[in-house]
Each structure stands twice: as structure tokens, then as C-alpha cells.
Image (tube, rainbow, N blue to C red; front, side):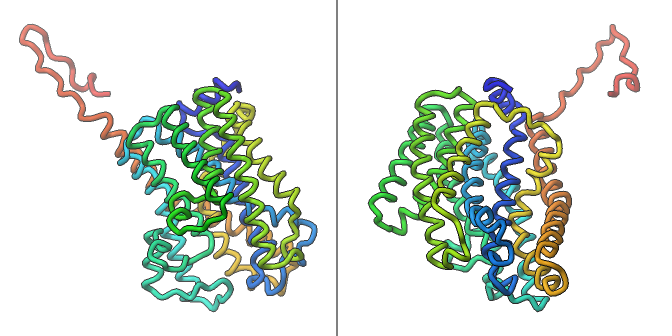
Length: 386
């Protein structure tokens, strides 16, 4: 597919299958990082020692969240075009909260009704209720499960991009928005000055990824202009620096043996993210049109939310009877199956209900047929009913 074809798809269907695949890859990356690197308390021993052949690749999975942020920058900017603030807020609410509420409930039940101990946040009932808002960090309440931290980042991105929703998204306004955000993030990163409000609003550790994704969406809409390549390049430099700092922080915490990820691999991974998003923007991945990709994209969010609970529940039960690889495989398949069930039972019905209501509201009331004149015989009513 050409770049023009990609732009037409983005404006028309509002969905790019290649992004569904990248979403799923990002979710698997995060899952691999947790299962094969981070979840020591789940396995009872260092996962990198259990799975040494994939320890470096799994360690790079920590950056799967950053790929999510890039995709979010692309997709959210695409979704706000010509949309009002109310419609944008409703679409985000419907997309995030149904599966999230189930996740909070599953986590509370996991630690309240079973003997599970690994990764237990030890929350009170009121703290689980606070987690239902997705604003628990604003209230200084601990996350019920570790992956929720990224949702707090996403919510702040939605708040920032609402500025474009209110004023209307245009190329010029987007470039100003992205330029100011990158400048603020870069200034914060290179001065090394830590400030609570700057971190809360500017998000210097993650801003580059969102701006990179936004740049690539604008390429699908307006073509690969030089200013957009420059914006993507600047964001890429900041993204590499942020990724190195994040992985180094993890290595300093657990040691290189438990997180064997060299610097060159970190840089190569971030460059690969940008290359893949550029390929999406230029339409080079438009041949990816397998219908199953839509399903993979749909279950990505539930996989992200529920893979921790799956590991806590299944791995300790099987670890002593099955080899580590088989235990991990069973856990992954069970997580996928449960995630698909959540999508079909909870997410999809709510999303389809809201879409149907929106279509009916847009269509408006059906026109009332005029009374037939006396000179013209009325139509056969049975024949006129569609």
C-alpha cells in the first residue's frame, strides 16, 4: 500500500491492522519481561537463570510499554480529528475502564480468596476502591498491580492532548503542541532537575514516545514532510536517552545477571520502534491485512492487564510438577484465553452498545412521511415497509 493508501485507511476505517500487530507484540514483550525476568517471587528463583537463552530479549521487553506509548500517540491523534471533547472522553472511558474494573476485581479476589502471596500489594478494601478510579496515584494510593502505572501515564497524555481537542487539531497546532512538549521534556531531561509538577505534567521520561507516534500519524495524513521527520528524529534522540536511563535503573536495582541487557541492544530496540512506526506511516506494512490481527489487537489490553494475575495463580501451582518452559507456556495460553473471554464478554458488548447509541444519535429521528394528497391513491403500506 502506498502512503496515500495508508492515509485513506487511517481516515476511513480508523484502524490500521499493522498497529494491531504492533500492539500485540508490545503486550507480549511486557509479558516476557515479567515472566522471564522480573517475577522472581512468582517463580521462587531468578527467572533469568531459568530461561538463560532468552534473558536478553526478555529483558528488552521492559520497553514494550514505550512501544505502547508510541502507538498511543499515533492512534489517539488519529482519533481526535474532528471529534469533540465529550466524544473523545467517552471513547477513552469505554476503551479503558470495563476491562480495567474486571482486572481490579480479579486482583482483589486473587489475594482475598486464595493463598496467593507473590506480588501481593496488601491493600485494604478502600484502597482497591480507589484503584477503580484509575486515579489512585493522584491520591497516593498504591497500584493494585504493577502494570497500572502506565495507565496513569496514558491518562495524563489524554489530558494534554485534550488541548488539541478543544482548539481543533490542525497540522500547525499539532506541530506547536509537539514542539513545546519536546522542548519542555528535553530541558527537564538534560538539566537533571527533578520537580514533581514537571514530572506530573510534562512526563519527561515518556513524552518523546508519544510525540514520535504523533509525528508518524501526521505523516500518514499530510505526507512525509521534512518538519515531521525532524520532530520524529528529535523525539527519537530523547527516547534513546530515556530508555537507557530506565533500563540502567532496573540493572542497578537487580544486577546485570538478573537483567542482562547491553546498551547497544537498548539503542537498537528503540531505533527498531521508530523504524516500524515509520513503515506504518509510509504504508509499507499495508499488506498486513489478516483479519486475525484485529482480534490480536483487541485482546492486547486484557493480556496486559491480566498476565500478572495469571502468573501469580498458575506458575506456583505448576512449577514443581512441570518444566519451567511448559509452565510458562500453559500460563501464557491460559492468560490469552481469559483475555479473549474478557474482550468478548465485557469489552466488545460495551463498545458496540456505545457505537450503536452514537449512530442513532447522529442519524436523528426518521422523517415523518407526508400525508398522501386526495388526488393520488395512497401506496400499499405493506409494500412500502423496508
